[in-house]
Image (cartoon, rainbow, N blue to C red; front, side):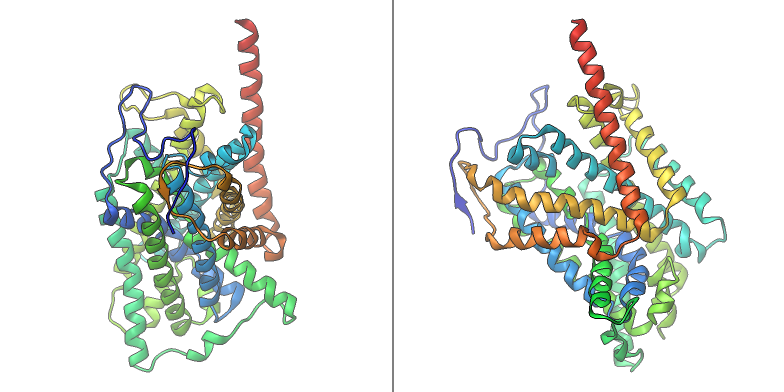
Length: 459
């Protein structure tokens, strides 16, 4: 419940100002905020990785999504307290810096968030080039994925900026695709189609209790990819009307709505399609449409799915390039990363940098591995965020804000740490990929420190 706290070093939810003294416009009301959060969460995860999750857990496909839903709500509760307490753009990096005052840790958290956006966009590129596009044309998936990333970079360089109202339209289209799947399931149930017995079958790589545990945890860690996105919404805090009041409610409604839809989609998918068929498809929901005795054109659903994953990829590429630009302006990445294209006013070096990383990722990874990399990076970040809630309880602020029950961030920390741990039995390449991305960030950090040190000595 809301509480009132005081602190001399925080001025509460006042308008933040840019360096030129002009504050951001608070134009996002409660309804638009909810739709923005839903739109941020929906996309590649549920459209592309449902089959891979089914391959890890079997017919009980709904179970990892139920667990992932619970973990997402726990972490959303932490974000709800923090964004209400510190209604500023910057998200996890801001909270980490306030809690620990360790610039290097803050940088690592921010860089992991940026890299999670790139691995997510790369997974979306792979999904775009997979069975959904294959329903319409036959072309090399890897080539399409690379061209897709380059097309996003071109749009980004041109200065693509989607307003929140445009995001509402995109969200409705994405949500429509999932509601079509739920509708197909309802029709199938009344027609007596499907195999309800599959819903209770947990089939993992082994029959021992440990194998079942790690199989379900691995499926949950991968399925959690479908829930990521709500953490990006806190960067809109400075453009939201009364964020301390509206953000907690919007976060819970947004995560609750998407989680409910995801569980229903998982139930329908397992009911109508054998998990072995889902596992082999990079467009698993398309298999559901084809399996149902409903005259819905698979080609139309493929177009909807392509739209959904395209939007996810574009949002993540834009987020990553802007975060790179912002870190350069703060002096924690080389200054060249902050260079702007003169006529378009877009962060050209940052866009080129993140595009090269994304091309490397789509050239060397598949949907499952890239999605799992996204989940792993963000689960690590979420574990830190859940801890910061507890650490920052000592930091009092003047205004009233949402305060989550202490048990929730405690359980959230344990849950996210477990899902990021080797107990999930994730593939080694996920850790290698994430490690290389973070190592790249450390190298850039070190180079920047050396360059700044040399410049300081020359003054």
